[in-house]
Length: 86
Image (cartoon, rainbow, N blue to C red; front, side):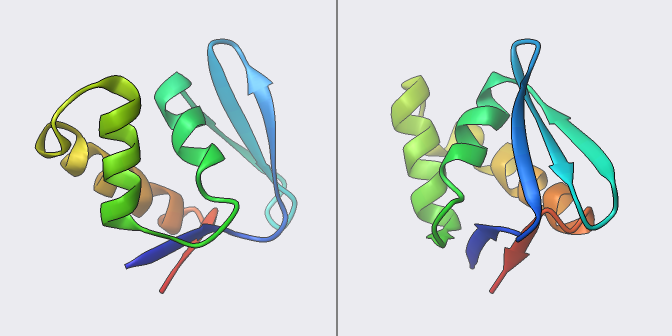
């Protein structure tokens, strides 16, 4: 599965993480620092497995530890139309 940030989503710093403003729905979606790193990887299409590997490398954990959380985050972002999945 390939993931990419949806058009019209504007990131901005928010506390220890990030808020994404969706210009299409005029709503915000906030994420912690890990979410901020994940979002920074979505400016170009990326395979979910590659994204999981990048998160695992960044936080020095096994991919199996974060894979479920990353997939859930992508599902949440997709449900809020903040990313496109292909």
